[in-house]
Image (spheres, rainbow, N blue to C red):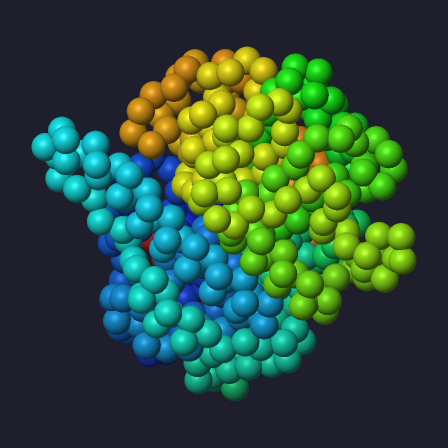
Length: 468
């Protein structure tokens, strides 16, 4: 068995790992790379292997940096099955359609300027037709049910607790009369978060591919979430300004709304309009409601609470679907909360809200999730004086804040605890750390070596390992 790393190696985006067993090849995740625009576009368009030679894909979850390149794979000749959980199938299908639509819209907008300047126009990475062909290849598998992605390999999904439908996967590879277990963590969630179940573990691993996003830090106590949200909302009201929250349409948006709903129920939220401005977030929230198999007890209790029948919606909050409604939000006078995608400000309606308000000192921009290097979100969070938005540069005069407690990723302690559980049978030979910036991965590698006494590798892009 050979393992080659083609994404999320030394970075947190573009998850993609190639596994070869004999003459069979399968890919773990196939995500979009996010970062500098020119580098991003070129890397996403050019696959590092022949798509037609890939037999199957195993998808951990539906975030775009894990699934967003699947239409490129299909467009390039992949014709195999894409295995994932039932909820991931539903969410990823909608995410990919939204991605294709956003690409077409953003490219159209940018190309107007490029044509005026006699520059070569851009093309989207893929179309909605490519997405439709991709969705046809999804094969949903329930948690805890085994499946055979390729001959000689048996897989099983367990809930990763990271987002709706997210999974860690164990691949049991049979060669020469013995079995070797390769565990892929996907993105590992946190314990005791609202809405979703806690992450489960796949024990008895021989080799582990593991994320390291927060490998060098601990999260704030969740008790501070309400305090921070209350503070920034009150600041918006006092300054007659806008509170803009970039948030992934699936997962982060629902958790922000859930916490705002709790503040509303406790009488701690001022009366002001709150908008969730993302067609995908609207659809995703509907998808949430039909997948209670992913919910924890707290969420299930909230759904059946007679005093609050909808923890994902409340008075004063509006879900916005149409572009005309979205444009009206920016014309609104007075304070308001605008929750919009994308979470790293790399596309979608959030760009138009930022373009309109980032130069206004009464505006607050609240980041509720991780911002990868070279993304617009990271540039704003790092308090650059000017940032590029849709081909133009804007001066940042808005107040910039962050809230760590809403992260959907396990922190350093959570990651080490998860890794210990995979070692139960004492068979663990090596851990490969991916999906983390170099500093985070190096820090986690040191901690894992000290506490588990196991060999840890931090692979580079394209690096290959012979496992058995």
